[in-house]
Length: 628
Image (tube, rainbow, N blue to C red; front, side, top):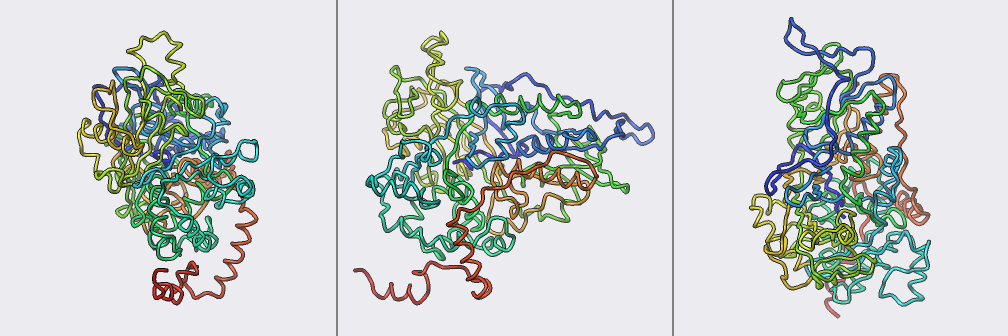
């Protein structure tokens, strides 16, 4: 679930790889629209194109491309997108190829959830067909420190097909449950493992969350203020009264791979918002699909061609912004690569991560944002190219894999395994996801290998393992990380340690220190709006947290459009900035919200809706009663 994707601040990356990295794709960055000439009197550089609104977008990921797309939709703008990475469109998020096998590598896989409406809209506007670049919606296997917990079904397809998700509920009850609204559909239709320590009582304790779920409104600043100052752990265990077993087995793994942080270090508001968006908002919200290849090849290269076809966009790579300053006339000066290039412009859109912002000197930003408090989550992405098993295994989705048969069997229900912390002792606070790329990406498919004429030695099985909150890994050597990865995969899948370094044909290890937005306690109070001042705007997954109820890639795309909408209003131009709203509340949730509002009007100020069994007098009575 990867938020499921690494929302990567491209500037934060250090990488390690066996021997030399070769960039993927042939697109080269250049800059011509923002032509500059040297002022002989001052020695600085100035723009020579002064007839249009000059917009500089800083950051080349989803937020940056979204902003550049919207800003360049006007014939009255010239847009320059500055990307710190030299690799090509999307930077490190786009990927590159290995030197030995010449196979694609990227910095973590990117999931696309059913309610990514604006992201799908952006893909469509590029001229791409979703079915050509994305897999079908895929179930996910959830694993805790105790072993397999459940398989989450693809709920959005239940109403469209006679096929029912696997579940241990009796048939008549399952038919009734199919009609239930979220989150009850996810909780009851998931196929829970018989070996899981979760009891029916544990699962039912999740009902205690209904009060806070209804009370917390995704786009209400007051709701964020109420819940942002406490931790997710306090909320789940102390307010909502979920059992410790449910918290350990179900909540903790999801916290470690969605907001990517343990409950004690995660804002309760962020947890509620994240779970709502990714799992609870609508039927099928938990459903996710994946890119059939590298994001660079499938999305960012076509997006680059689309932007450049407008002839008012330039994209410049290897452009690390050092500072931004505002002149007395209101225009901005952007200093690139420690003064090697100075760009004058009318407006700046910052599309960088929270920790990358610390590296940019800008007084306007520091007046509005406590940058020293901003934190990031460290991630490590490992891709292993393995000797294939001579006999391919056909799994339940009809795809073939050449993983060892015991691993293939453990992953037969899904090519995606979501793992909580403590799977092995070294990963005490580290969650991770396992992906079988032979079943997910066209470049690795077994059928492709069979039909390509490759020799047996050139075929391989491919595993991607992405670690989140990976501080305990990042300073290890490549060999140590690979050995730990193999042990973690074997433990998560409950198979013998059948793989060792001799099975590895090639590999990549990508280290992303403090690269992903960290939604810690009080972090929403530090999240700026998309407009800092006239001419200065921001976008990204950590921007305007109390605004549009979206996360990850979708939030980046949305805030990119919203930032340009503010710019267009400020400068009196017309741009394409329409934002598709989030799904409306289900009738059941709407009724709960109305009840919560009524209760809040009479409840003591600052109080939260506790589960009934957590009220002091009832909790005391239950403790005094003792075991039955």
